[in-house]
Length: 127
Image (tube, rainbow, N blue to C red):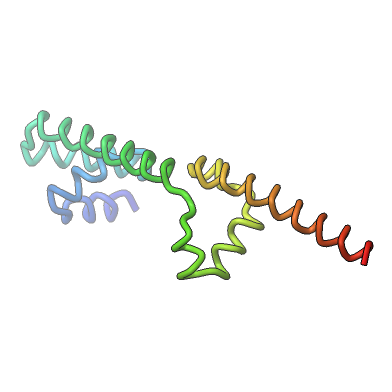
């Protein structure tokens, strides 16, 4: 099994190996080790490996920051009203999934929706 695994690592391009080494949390430890050994065997400069790791971490930070700043817009409810309404009403994991702005908007929406329903019930009982 390991030999087959080593062979597939050897067949990869240098860029693919750098991708494995630069994102070890996404790969099995044995794959990272074999990829690192193969890069050493190919005499890839350590500076290039470190640069790949740095760029990978930077991409991850940018992706997290983009998700954190993402919120609901009026256009979202015009283009896909059903799915956005379902998400904002029933999704409980927005903050945990890295969308704190959406989670704050969701909380305000639920409070407003609750007040609208309450007012509707009161008006129905009065009339």
